[in-house]
Length: 561
Image (cartoon, rainbow, N blue to C red):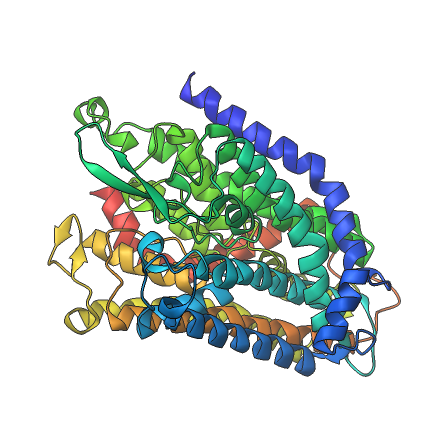
């Protein structure tokens, strides 16, 4: 089939399925978080955990619960990895080293799933489902809860500043949304040949007569939540390029739909909860414009001609699986970097300079196209607040959004939330490159021992962009096993996840105390093409002005060579 036609067909299928599920799933999630009733399973959880579902929290209590719960998750996962060797189902694997255990614990709790280890030879078939898969559910539910808390800040007026109950939101997001959807997706993946086994593996003889060991694991169940929860950590090292995780073109499309599903439908949830569906459609349009634009750039870059000799030698297929081809690889790459998922079905380090730069820029936008589960929505709403403030100043209109006036405190919280990621990315990259001999940065696989190489700089920039945006994908040519990378990337994931959450919850607490204005006369309209263009421009300018010098030194310079 013609590559252009194949690309168009896959994109059409993805968009059609998302459009079909947009209204029912979006409205269902709104009902989940607005309902006053609790299911029997939820009531059982409340009793066991001694949760009072009728007691709501201020933003301080909500944030404290998020941080405390996440800290407990990091500690549990760290200890589980360290004592893995003495637990059942360890497959002969020893406990994980302290540096890797810390990095991995922070990675999975922060919804990053950055992996500086080989899963088949490091994590047991008990550690994978009991530790890593559980955090895939819980970290995604935390993102959902924070997004809903921010939306309540716009909807509610509470003199006491209550924005909900974190424990109730966490339980509902897990029980009513993530678990049922993951079950359905896992069943679909099983029909495509994704494996589900607690066996440690089997031996086989290759075509050259060499005996090989093939790892097995409960892949299908974890693959479903890996994509649905925008987590991305593979149970096998090759991730979604492995035939046990992603065996067919159809399973590839299903996984792309899964990782886009909740972030896209949350815009409908937002519109339903605030009582204005046009608000949700405007946010969705901006997300779609960013996603579609970068997809077009990546497809063009990977399908273009690098010279007759290179094309004849199959250079365009370097690092890509034949069963997916360029269209399936590019579509997956843009979707996974735009949703903070980080799963990969191709080697991003083998993308062309322009293609690699596009997926890097996708993360540097702040994971809003359409972003992770919950994080994409609240990230875009923070940018919307900044856009309203700037637009209001330009045209002399009152800075209001959804009937709430935006003052100094609201703008300060929004600005701080936006500034966290660039600070982490640029500081981490600059320190690593400057102190190359100390940090362990020694160039890249194509130019070993040359810390000053252009592509080597891009690899480091990509690593810290991935960590600070809680994405988890990487340029594989960079070795990140040194203590510096394990620690610095772990801290980037930690601060990149939880500092913005604290600022967003503080923003929600400020908004919920504000009275709604009686009329929107004299305010800047926040729906339609005009505001959509302003919001799109704000997102582009924030990323372009902040990261353009770094991009010019890396992928742009490499593309111009």
